[in-house]
Image 1: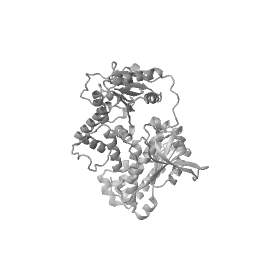
Image 2: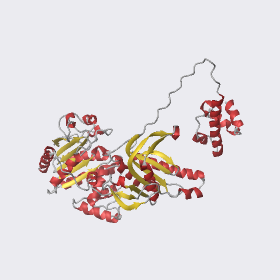
Image 3: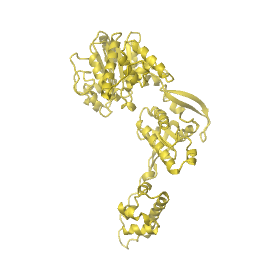
Length: 545
């Protein structure tokens, strides 16, 4: 430790000798020190900069004074030069987020306080985009560059980017910092060359080459505070998934020619992703007559009071949603009640998210409605099934609507509230079956939350003698998907077309102690969902009853 003491004394910083000794910092670890380490030791900013510079100079001095090897001494083998980084050409959606008014903040805030504010902002951005599987590529002062589609690609990267941008504007506004914060977001999609291009250690960056990152940054610059502006390339991939405001053609610095831009306002009220992405119409369904006829036969059985379950299985994009849409087209002229639930990978931790969305659509709740108007609409739709006031209070709470006194006050423990809500939802479905046959469709049911899973299980049992149908689509690629307990045979997942398997809901079936085995009664014969987990395909399940 004497060497460290002498070195610090030479630098005029002997007051830190004791701290270095207490933390056992000697020359063997000196070169590993970072600014954060020195800050943790209580070294002030100016001295930290001097120490870091001195460590770099120490490396240079050591290299310059290293003794030359003796004549005839074999030189140690040298490491092979690092391979040249290989760029990868791919389509990426790039999001650039910038903090509004950071220059004004720096003029009136102490640097330490400003650092805390910017750190809170950067942490908020990172946490938000991580939920949508975005990749924070670079922090640029008060700006953050984010990739969607690299290093992990998804079919809905453009949608993920816009949802992340909308959520980010709300999250930044809600930050509790020394100053009120707002952000601007620009998003663009295009072909780029991306890879590990520059830097090392903490400075290592996943570089990206192409017009797309520049375009996203320029779009951010024309955005109003708390606005998400997207390029035409991104807009084409989103269909009617969101509500947009056309900003017209804009002249952007460094971009040749006017660029058309849109402001993404909020998620749309479209019934589902499939419809939103095919707003211009569907192509004719070809080669699915056998599967469609099977669905229709099961629907006919359901109308007689015998509950049915149908599972559609096949590779992603093979046409399961299109087959479901064809079924809905064929049933359009028949009197029935249709309930569609859309699960989301971003909301697996949000209890009953698909049911909340379905109830929003059924009641016709609009973005601009007042809480009073929303409650009135909810009452109107619940009146059709003579829903008790106690259940209506639970539904209003589930929809995050305030109780204005029209419902009884609820004083329930969390677990009791969960159980009562499930009972109310099941009673609601039962009431609907007394009016018309019910068709329930669960899209992407592999992303259901545990509460919905348990609720679906109990509901299906109660519906076995009702005119009721359900459809779900678990994805075996999701960790834990086998917990759905889908009974099937591995052969279900072979062939170029969506496979269809079906079964009546057994009258004597009862769930086991594990509520995760929701659809254990779905298909008779074969192994349980371990077969799904090995298949690498996605499924849709139609329960008709």
